[in-house]
Length: 389
Ligand code: KIV
Ligand code: ZN
Image (cartoon, rainbow, N blue to C red; front, side, top):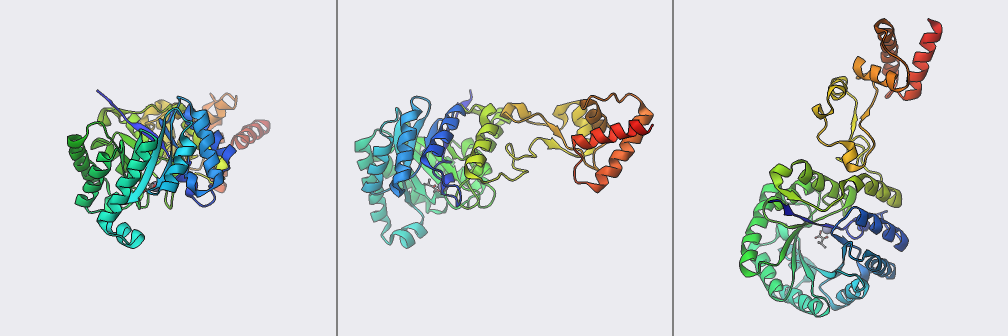
C-alpha cells in the first residue's frame, strides 16, 4: 500500500529569507491561501521573533488556515522565540512549534561556544518549555548531515524523551548526496522506531549542489514520512527542495516510490506564478515543472514525435500541473510536420503539398534570421505567398 507523505511548505519562512523576496502581511496571507488550494499539509508561516510584521503575518495565517492546513513557525531554542511562535500560531486549529538548534561540531563550537552536552541540554529545555504550551513540537537538528552520528542520535533521543513529536533532519548547507543522506535517514529511522513509533521523521534539504530534490526523494525511500519544500525551490542561497519537483517525481514514478501526497497538482503552476508575481523573482526558463520551457518543444524530431503521440516525448501532461497546453516552438530546427500543424492551427488549409513545401522553404529562411517564429509571422508568410501566387 502507498504511504502518504506529509508536505510542509516553507516558502513563507525559508523562501522569504532570500534577498528581495520579502513579502508584507497581506501578500503572505494571499500566498498562504493559495498554498491551501494546493493542499499542502503544513504551512511554515514565518519566523515571528524576527519582526513585528512577521509576527502579525504568522498570526493572520493561523487565523485563516482553519482545518485546511496545520500552521507552524520557527523558533531558536530560546524562550522568547518559543513564546513568539506560540502567541502567533495559537489561533490555528492545528498549530505546532518548530525549534531549531545545531548539532554539527562547527555549530556547537563556532556558533554556540559551548560544550556538546550544554547545547543538547538547551534543546531539551526548549522542547520541554514548548511542550508546556502546545502538544505538537518539531525539533530540527540543524546541519544534521555534517554532524557526528552518535551525538546527533543522542540529541534526537533526548528531545524525543522531552516530548518532541516531529524530528526534522536538515541538510542545512546542501552538503549531502542522495545515497549518504538516504543511509542517514535509514539509521535514524531504525533507532527512532525502537524508542517511539509515533514520532514523525522529516527532512529539509538545501540545493547548494543541485541535489535537494534527489536527497529528499532518497530520504523518502529510506523512511522519511514528512518533507519540507518550497515553491520554485526558493530558499537560502541556492534554495530548498522544490515542492513541485518532489511531488511530481512521486506522482510520475508512483510505482517506484509507492508514496503519494495530498497535493492538488493542478494548482502547481498557479502557485508558482503567484510567487513570481509577489516576489518579483523569476523562475529559470528550463526549471522542471514550473519553468516557461517545461512543456515547450522546439526540435523537429521531437515535434514530429509529439504530433504522432504526445507520450513519445512527454512524461507529464501540462494540464496535470495546471500549465497551458504543450507548446511547439517554431525555430529553424522545426520540421515540416510542426510547420503544417502551425499553419492549420491558424485556420489555413494546408493540403496542397507543393504549396506547403514552398511555404516551408520561406519559413526556414525566415527562421534562420530569427530566434523564434511567431504566429503573426506565419500569418504574414501564408497570406503574402498566396497574394503573390
Ligand atoms: O536549513 C535549515 O537547517 C533550516 C532549519 C530551520 C530547518 O532551515
Ligand atoms: Zn533551511
